[in-house]
Image (cartoon, rainbow, N blue to C red; front, side):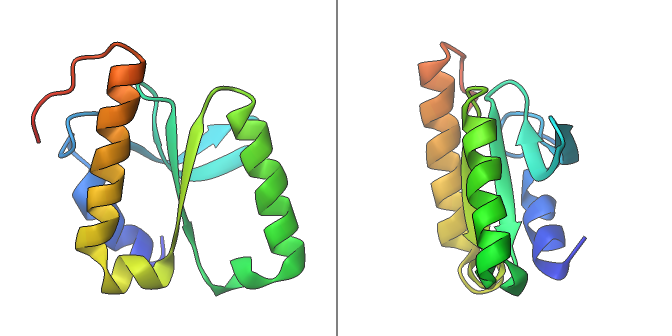
Length: 110
C-alpha cells in the first residue's frame, strides 16, 4: 500500500464509518483499493500515474464496468488524502450515509 492508502485505510478499517471496508478487493478483473460490500461502494486512491492518458482511459472503463454492477466509485487523488484528509473523510461519510439510505440500510452513527 502507498502512504496515502495506508493513511485512508487507518480511517476506514474496523468499521470506523459503521460498515466493513475491505482493502485490495477483487471485482471482475479489477482490484479496487477499498470496498464496502454492504453499500456497493468502492474507493480508489489515484497517484500521479493516473494522470497518464492511457491510465486515465483505463480508469474510465474500469469505473463504467464497476458502475454497471451497481457499484458507486469514489476517486481521490493521493495529494488530497495527504493534505485534506478531513474533507475526504467528510465526502466518504456523506456518501456512506447516502448509500445506506438508498439501499434501505440502517446507518449507525459515526
